[in-house]
Image 1: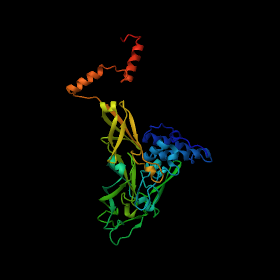
Image 2: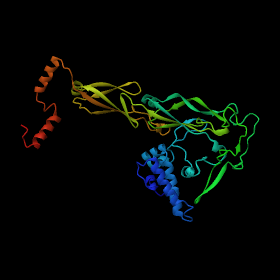
Image 3: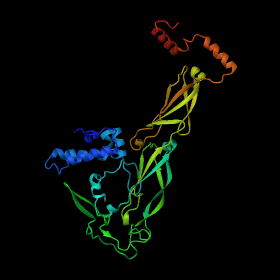
Image 4: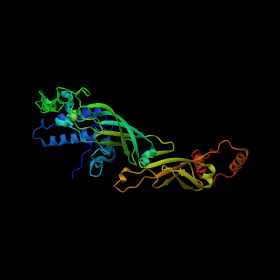
Length: 386
């Protein structure tokens, strides 16, 4: 099987390219390799398909992040699970959009996304930003959110017309819901601007919703946050976006997650980092230290004699749960404890006497690193350090 080319290479942009640069590069190359300009040229057709695939991934923040981390493997079987139907929540890298609508839509002043009928009247997708704590990301949580949106008008039951009125065929598109226009080499088809793709218009619109079939309303929803979510993950609530126009299907609601910084723990992927201060005596003599864990418990670590600042101890399985472990068998991450030796401050008279006595003892046996360092300095200076 042939190796797939890098998406950034296909579009001729760097990995730090912004959305506008990606769009300009795609438009330029799509014009160059479009099959209508290159009839009977299989090579141009192949390049055009590559461009579509590359742009569709890189223009979407979630799919681009997955591609940057995993490459083409992010979109092979087993990666990028989709949410189920029936209004359930799920993680989604986003559905493939209509390339031509994104590329040429502005030539005709915008328009519907995919032809006429109900799809042209589909409600808009909505975004909701939700901040959670690191503990919530660890345990999972069900939260209630309040979303301002558009709901089906109860007065007309979403039809957009007054009681007893019936829609009539749109005279602009003759009921097709679509209109066509030529633009250079291309024939572009888009939703009818008069009927919005429905193919019919309402002569006596509903007084409550003005014929739209929907009204503005705040909606309260429950969001199930699974354990192991990370910064930037999104949850899709199918059908919980804006209501469609005049009975069209609703859009989806995307909940984008952000995780607030923690006072003690720092997250690195599945693993957690924690700095724990210990006394100079504990570091020198060794002992047992109790450290916190994110699940609210405590763990004990054994500090060996002569422990230095920066020494790390790993507690297996005390890190973050992984979303991948749901059905894939991988376990949670680890908790890394980094000890920081604290220098005594505000010494008592007796403590000072003991430390001064300790300082008079030959330090080479008790501080080999500092003794070795200054020996190297002396050697570097040619013995002039005496």
